[in-house]
Image (cartoon, rainbow, N blue to C red; front, side):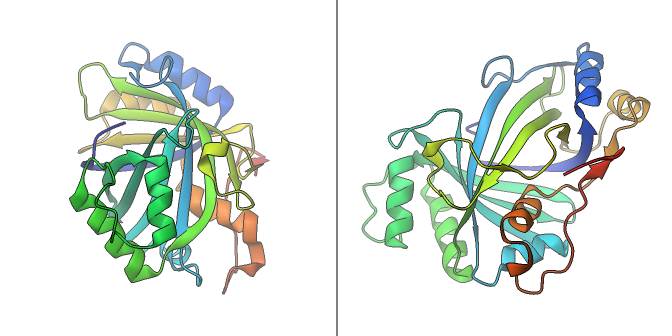
Length: 255
């Protein structure tokens, strides 16, 4: 979880729990559980940011060729003295670039309260250059904390290709009444609990064996935006210019 700068391609799918269980079984000759968590299982809790006009939401909703998000993330049970990850996730022509740095959660909150890098020379961060980029992005967009998104992740790596990663996100929840991420992964489900968000992450192309498995199990490729779906559930028609929700339905199961 400590990689700070990387670039990759991502394919997203919305699948059922039965498809998830079948895919995990059929992938076993090719994949191993992620080294993080227990048997590749861990919880992700993220604080997302947006502008007063929901600019990040609309950039994502309209699928601009270049779009980016800012989030503050922790893994599993983390208290105020624990480790957090501040990151900018950028997407350009279907290529995802992520730039992030590690710092104590209490220092991340200190930065958000002061709204500036000034007088934060004592912050223990892993990458000051990335911190400066985050600060520039935050000021340029006038970003503010918007909501917390959390989910349980089951992650895998290919046994011979370190660039191939497959993740399954379950129990997806969101909230905007409590923006302290150390309070844990609670909130309203924004995708039906019987559905799973599958992400295939590669540097170049998805291998043929995995493509065949996805076809065999009839996994439907779907750009299910956690950010947009969460915000629409929490704010609905209070979003300026709001018109239609993200589609999160397969085989008669919907959110």
